[in-house]
Length: 237
Image (cartoon, rainbow, N blue to C red; front, side, top):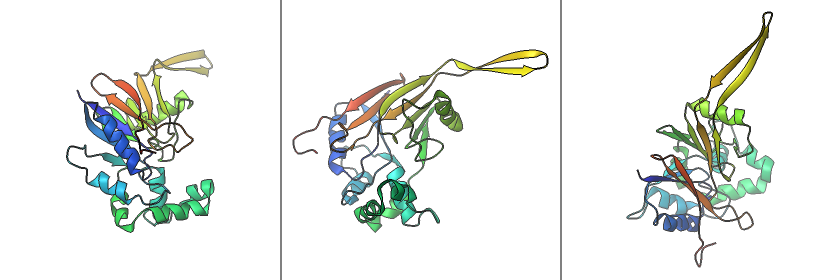
């Protein structure tokens, strides 16, 4: 079975996307998922968004979901009711909000507003954050109970997430043990849990000081996860 490619964090960087596409030519990939953060505060995201909507001959048609930066933009422009980009304001200030607004053309807003929250394919959930919220940042340090909750919310065995920007694969197996104390004594319970995984796909555009661009390959037939690192070429930054 051909593999899936999963990435997140482009934030308007067309050169980063093209670097990933070059890397994918070496792999047998059937489907490309982009797990959010298509836009960012860097100047002009239009070229990337146009490429995503209209891939070149021979390129995969990416399946995109909404990310945190995308959600902040949509909220500020009024696509989320009375919500505004309060998360971005609190984290980076008013200047970051203005930069984000200036980076995205109004012509691209309708397409962004129609992006789904996530996908469910086979027994996998493909999201930017988690089943709880687009801003939910899961990592290898998240508690097993929290990860199990995020999996069971969507009744899946594999959850792919891009919010933290990390590459990780946490496997949950075994079961849950609990004790119920009553007048007759203590009653022990064991609930078996099928083997489940939460996978962080990495970040394609992590910034000049945050390490290399990364993405993930997944073989749904063998359940194998491969963490990839984009090899920069001359002229790629």
